[in-house]
Image (cartoon, rainbow, N blue to C red):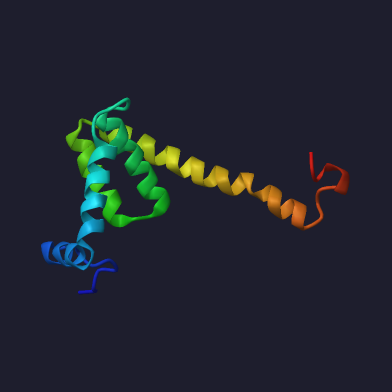
Length: 116
């Protein structure tokens, strides 16, 4: 059987990360709790945002964890998929929008239009 591309997270790995930088680890955990706490946005909404962002950043651990958390907060499979589609559109839209840089660099944009 092939080795998984990403190693499975374990309690031992978590403890080792914490031991190597305990203050930073504690600060990060506190930050994470504050970010995902109920506030102006519902926890479910925050988890759906996290699922979308995890797909853009391509973090398999985040995709797994935040998908599970979103489901626990009541997100449906349809909501999850729509959030993922929003992420896909935004990623593709960013590439499309940045094509202006290539058009300028390649000389496809007339000089008098370059700084409008």
